[in-house]
Image (tube, rainbow over all chains, first blue to last red; front, side, top):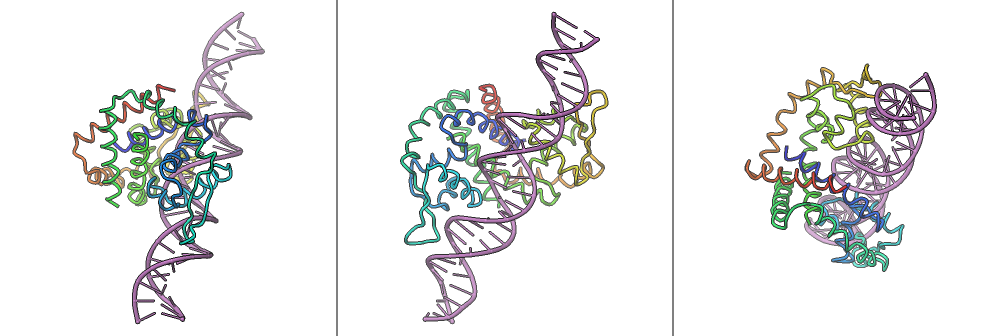
Length: 135
Length: 135
DNA sequence: TACAATTAAATTGTGTGCAATAGAAATTGA
DNA sequence: TCAATTTCTATTGCACACAATTTAATTGTA
């Protein structure tokens, strides 16, 4: 079953990342948030959710944990106070350098060459888009 | 990133399955348990966990919820009382017929032909095996 | 300008996942 | 034989993930 192959691969990734991300003190979903914020700081909860396919019920408590540890700040948008913008602190930006080794470890562990990785990624992207489009 | 493609596809699958599995009253991980038990009833917690790549901390409470609803029974193995065997009740076996439509809906929604599905599944299987082997 | 509809976050409740640990049963080994 | 070790399940604690609901702010429209 394709669905189970995806399910099992996702857990394998999470298990693989866990000890490697513990070195910088974040979980895998938190790492994804940082990947986004390192590229584009100050996104709203909504924008972050759109990029990661998560809703506020997941993101809000996740961000609050990061805020409690001083890695990000939450600021109401001045023009639209419904929105909350997530901004990295200096410490949050500093994590980036510590996390540089992680993608390299993953690349080495997949046992797949670049072409195979690209094919898989493309197939998964199409699959996700189709599933999301099927409501 | 390959890991994110897997992560996003897994959530898309879960979201896709949710409303369709609500018709038979189970979650996606519970559905996976039934897929296994419909093929081979009376497995131990350990054996079930090995097939689904889950540990007892996940399976025990999941099974207890199914037991509370009368879909499975938990029985200590007579020869080795450390083991607990999970057996379907008549009602649990009866779910199988109700669930027949689900895989068809999924197949229709992926938007991929059989060859593409097979390639993806194979790639994901290799990926999972490699990641699990990398400790 | 009122005020209903919409939007953004946060909250609540349920159900996974997994690490760490505990406790009982079975196995091993001197 | 029986103490040490291993195996199996259950429990605890923490962190997602999402549906449904709530609250506050904004927008659309008469």
